[in-house]
Length: 436
Image (cartoon, rainbow, N blue to C red; front, side, top):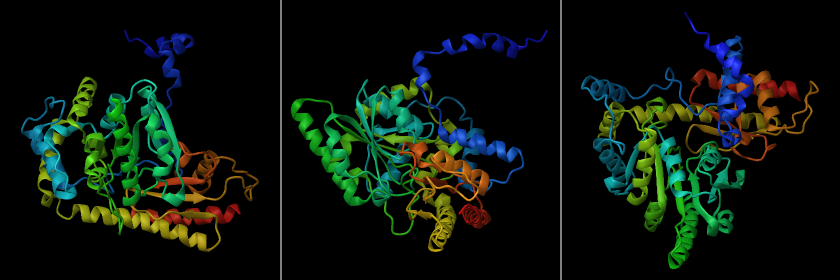
């Protein structure tokens, strides 16, 4: 006898809304994943779509380093298939400290390192462990996922609306009025979604403001203010752009900084789920307990393989050079196409890409009535028009918490080929030409 489980679910449908905790009714899903589902549906219908939505890599276009793949297979063959330590395997934790000492001039103790399954668990664990119910968490918008993490931690989000003039990065002046009541300040550089970096001067000013606030709190025996520094894209910077860390600029920031990183973006290895953070050991201890309860650690074989490459970067050969060149070719190509359209009078502009895999593009179409009589009133209207009329899938900044109606969108190049660059630019130009 086969049980029709679908029928059992259907019989329960009327009472299903009462099955979960009431607070879960307030939890929001990911706009990006919803957009991705729409793109998949169109492709299944045979519609051509230039997909610039997901911050991921197509393995057929951007494979992981051969040396990483080989060492994962060797680790598996050697029997490394059991649980890793909740804090991370010793080889990887040591290798992470070697990486930062060699590349950034930061000599972290091994006790400050915590490994997780990608950057997400350390990011969430930092918010959850530092933020008490109702605590204020300051983060710039647009920004990736912080509103969800703050909600899950039962904190109170304080979004700071940034501007293209500052590369969608917050300034110290914007943060200063909120610091006295905050528990965490988030900075992500290079930034998702904008593809921009925070400057040395601005980051230094932010650090100075945090240090001054913590000096005040120390005198009053109050809990400190932390900087959560999401640096997962730090190895992907271009041209004269330079990555800066809080501790390099102000060593006194070390006790107040949690820095998050991963191999996900720098090695095109999003699905391998190897990420980590460096944090003051007394904070890392609590984060380790939370991640341990979640079981949100990276696989042992992947950790061992990652350690080998971090300790000996020569194993990567020319991988990083070629990888960055390919990413920059795509970003530069779309940027050049957008700038050419702007010179021809089409209502589109962009910010130069400084890092990560994203380009910030603005379509000055909100509020306009197009040639076919359609009026684009919201960023969602713009996104749908680009998808259905140009066959170009993007994510609007409003999906990252930015005020609706700006016309700013994120274009991600991790899943497009070299040929797709010219095709995307042509599709955009043709659609804008028809629309106006």
